[in-house]
Length: 298
Ligand SMILES: [Mn+2]
Image (tube, rainbow, N blue to C red; front, side, top):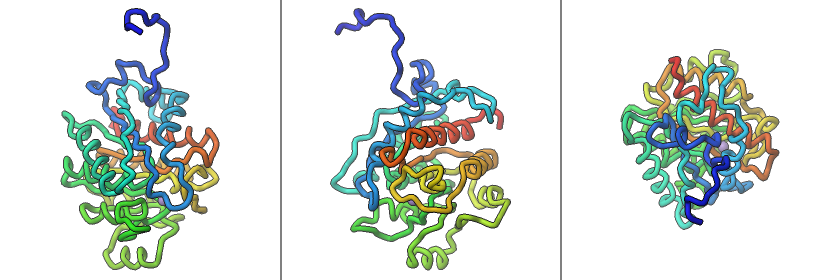
């Protein structure tokens, strides 16, 4: 159909927040989102490959105005790229693909907040290492029910069970929310002095103490299974005793205020394992990270 014959009726954009072209254009966007629909390295319940599409669909129902922060998040400008094509032959090659894609957007101009929407948590490796290329002082805040510190798992060192371990080989990392790990992971973490905030924590100042463990530039990696399964059951490996929504937001807002969040990922939504509310919760988390990291007020 020739363009001139398209009727001038309203169309719904298919990007995050369903933004009109002027707010979704790359040039003016403060944030870039890259959907990474992979779940090849999932070990229990698969389906995270459907997470990015479900999060973007749910985001179209979010209010652009953020009541907590008091500004319109859409006005920041958010560019959503097409989904990255999975490489299912080799997790290392997928990691390199994610790194190449994220590095391109993270390297544009004065620096746009660049986020990955997963997909299983193996996407964190390539995304974090891409930001390290642009911020040598980077440290990583890794929020997950699991330590992801196996040297290799189910035949690969580039899957979701090894993400934090691979990242830690290149830059400082702080684990938050951990409540399930293998003995070998516990021994390695204790021996190497990796910073961990196990969950639940008796420390009421956890947000302040975690922020102070991080360097000036921070990459935030969120496995949604850090949330309690009562709030977020739509994940590959739901683990009881998790963080509550307000506890997670308190931490993220505090880190955004005290440090510079340069990139992030939100991973492991398996939408078919939950209700529409759970995709909506995941979309709201992406939205809140953008609001906190790009707030014009601090
Ligand atoms: Mn996990």
